[in-house]
Image (cartoon, rainbow, N blue to C red; front, side):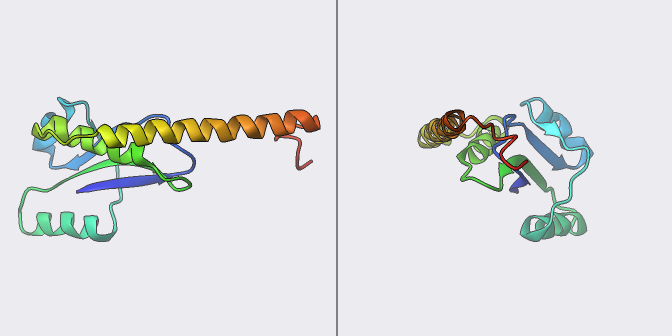
Length: 130
């Protein structure tokens, strides 16, 4: 199961976490995936993992932080890179990498415009409301 843990803004740190049976942790850790100390997995992903437990079937989930506020191809890229490393897949991520680069350029441009706007007014975003 591939899933995102929602956060505000765009996450700077793109770690991937796993939720799996204890005996499978090493496989994930060997590829740079951290074991989630605690996680609440709801929705379809949670239902599938629950069924895996009930039916004694192997199941695992890879999680990464994903932005609530912006399109976030970086989250998808993080998960695909982890899947490629863990299972020795060769999923091409060139288009995603370009999307991540482009999104960061656009967001930085907006941030710069925002700062310039307040510099011209002699205000700072912190003093705008009081």
